[in-house]
Image (cartoon, rainbow over all chains, first blue to last red; front, top):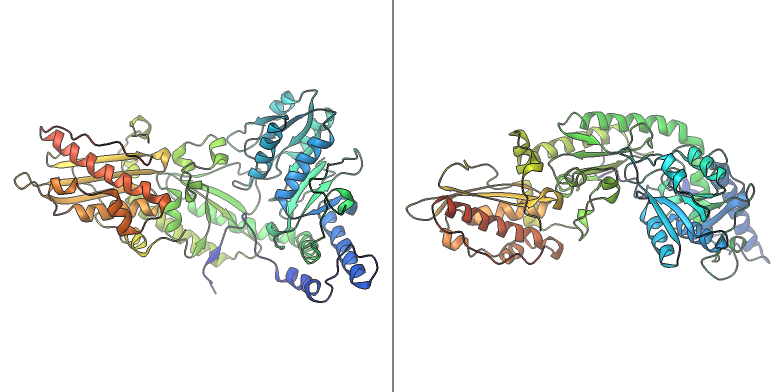
Length: 405
Length: 139
């Protein structure tokens, strides 16, 4: 049975798996102790649950439990990882290398660091959304302390070559931080095989609860330290003070366990649905997939429909299908997505994109409905689009002098 | 953002979508906006020479729902109006009628610009001087 509305905005957040909620419930009502209370059973139970969750989180990314610092989410992880390294390694240098397509939590953290006297290099990406490894190596200088590159992009799903990036970093004695928010739980991520020293991720993108995440901090080869960004009780080995969100952490642990168990089967099924959706929508004229189709998360596709505007397009079906436009037009700003612009897309294509994020819970009926609804809306809006009419008449739109406001 | 019922209605059932023959002396065409800004409106009017009354109006718009609704409503208002009265259509009338939120006021400004551009195109074609308008303030 098809149930509306359909949720295809899973890069923003995923629904919680009912099995996760089930695991969490007792930690609200019965085992509500503070994990730092050492003198009674309530505290012991909470601590035990946190330890168990920590093991599960660590296992999913090939880490040791002691290398997991629980946070409130990926934004905090990005801030703690990057600012924490910048402060801790100040005597070694002040230069950080990142990319223009990073999430705002990384870019704005880097801007903050620039204001503090740090130096940041922003690498460009190619049309597929990938950085150039030679450019990366060339950007390293004696003062470089950190390379911060996301594992997979939130708008286009492009997966970066983390192994190659970390090999270059190692050779030059530079640490690697990765925002792996979109990748963990979706594709195999292994901090040792991938050579990552610090990594931020969050529960709510992998069927867990909102408000809890983790920062992985390597403990050997090399031993990495970050300066705490919050002062307080010295929780999480002094790196992140604050009473632990026990039910959230329990849910996070459960979500990691389920991702580990289900990843292979989920990926196979979701990839098939994603490919069906993409193939069908690409049958429309002048439709383009944004970013790499080869190096990409299995559940993501980002498609531009030329000569229709993203927000207008969404309006055709957003009562029944939850999607996001690559365009930031929904905000007060008229700027299209900086990620799509970084790929070299013209403003017209950047304004015409839709981002699809499928999940463990997406089914084929939903995909069939989506294909039909979007195809119909694109066709209808093109009938209404002066740009489409000009394109059909063979007019080169770039030769027109638009009234720029 | 929630759209008003009127915006939704114009989006779902746009009035007067289409194309008039721009080579026709009686047709004035206004093309405003730019693809990189995410809005392009083309608004056309057909004017009865003898009476100066707008007998037909058509639009095509690339843009969000509010831009489509603003141009759709504008064509409705234009039909049957004299060119002189058409010049009096103010973008704030469109804002009020469609209940546009502040971030969408630029859509109504664009529609007003399109009306004026169409009228000027018609005037120039018919040997009249183009009317000078104040620059739009919103952009």
